[in-house]
Amino acid sequence: MICIPKVRHFWRCIFYGKERAKYRKHSPEFKLSVIMDMRENHLGIMETERKYDVKHDVISKWERIFLEEGAEGLMKERRGRASKVDGIAKVVHPNLIRKLKKI
Image (cartoon, rainbow, N blue to C red):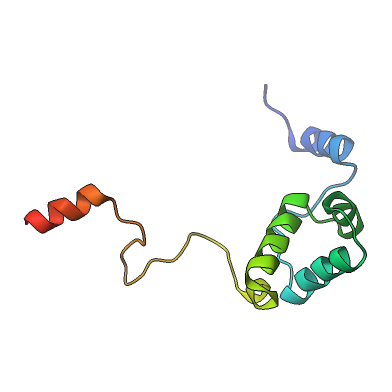
């Protein structure tokens, strides 16, 4: 069954209440303010999600980054795949190393 866009929009509004924008990019200051408000006011993840209209898994990720790296960690851009060092992937399979040594 093919669903036309108007029908999809209708069901999305029914299930989610309102449409959320896809792939929103939040500023580092906003991320920090959300985490600090959550910690200072002892809010749970779901309460923070409702208050700021940000998905709970995104808030959990911001909190983990904040706890591991501090406020500076929220300033880094983390979109896309992890970077490679000098064009070589960071993780190299041991069998590949053995084969390269034989050559």
